[in-house]
Amino acid sequence: MSLVLPTDVEGASTSHALGRAAIWVSGVFLLSTFILVFALKLVLPQVSVALALVGLGLAGIGVGWALVTRNRALVLTLMLVAAGGLYLYSFEIAVQSGPGRFASDSVLLSMPKIAMTVVGVAGRTLASSIVRCSLGFVLASVAVQVGGHVGGMRFAFDFPSIATFVGLIVLLLGLAAGRRQANRGSDTMRFAALAEERSIERSRIATRARAALHDTVLNDLHALTLSDVGTLTDAHRAFLARDIASLTHPALLLNEATLRARAGGDAVLSSGLGPVIRSARQRGLVVEISGDPQILAQLEPGVVSEVVKAVDQALVNVSKHANVNEAEVAIVAGVDTVNVVVTDAGTGFDASAVDAQRMGLRVSISQRVESVGGTVRVWSTPGSGTAVLLSVPLATPGAVT
Image (tube, rainbow, N blue to C red; front, side):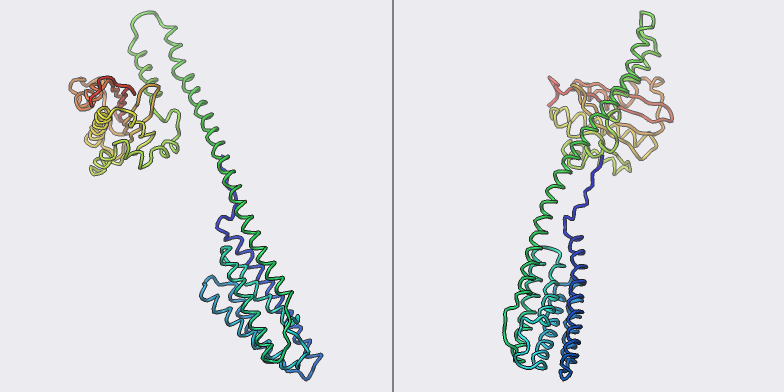
């Protein structure tokens, strides 16, 4: 099971959505202001609105551009341009309409201020959004108040724009709190999914283990019970050896992804296999580590040293005789043993046709492992590669230290 939650951890999706909404809101308010200015011209034909429209257009360009850019310096510059346009617009409205006709809280002035204030909601973070909203509100308010005052307009608190600014700040704080809560919930769900995955993996391993035992070991043991009493035949020994090899191979219970995940770089270094792997790579041999290399840390230092040297020699043999450039070292714990399997898919050989005393494995590998209380098994078939199993007990009295 894999659970992926569409949480907006970085806030990118939220900021994009708010940015699009801000473009619409600003556009509606600025367009409405244009319409009201033209209506003012119809009501007061003697009023000239040309410069007011220029100022309003300049403010609209600054606001629209600031909403679609992510460059902070450019956003600040555009907001200053928009504030300059609002100053010109407010001054012209105050001058052309005549003293006392409009106050600084007029709808003609409130809507452009609101359009400039909402620029901030497109910020990527809570802090940047609040700063941009505050900067837009302050610049717009100062531009309108100063322009109107210079043009002879009377002062009044603009409660609609103030309420809009406060509402936007509350909205941004609520969105930030909701995002944090969603992220905490996402973490909880991910932890639950991981726990379920581990449970499913344990069940899968148990199922594979039961199937492997039933299909191999139990069937072969049952066949033995039906055979005649006496010395085991070569055929019986062969399938028992096959069962042991299957059961000791880590891939019986763990899939490749699990094995690779547990065999990370830090684990390899702590196991003492790092120099061996580097040496093999210098010879042109690519070595895959699977299983749990950290298991080796549970052994006595002397035992680890002999096992590592034996693994090194096994990989040297692969480089010299297998005619391949890839090998695998799997480390897995048994009930009371640590098992290391070195495998390759090379030329292989017929182990039964070679005198055990003549095999390089005897001195370079077997004696090392046996000196610390372990055992070595070799399986090889011409054309099908070789597997060397090194098993050492977890408790090794009298081990070399």
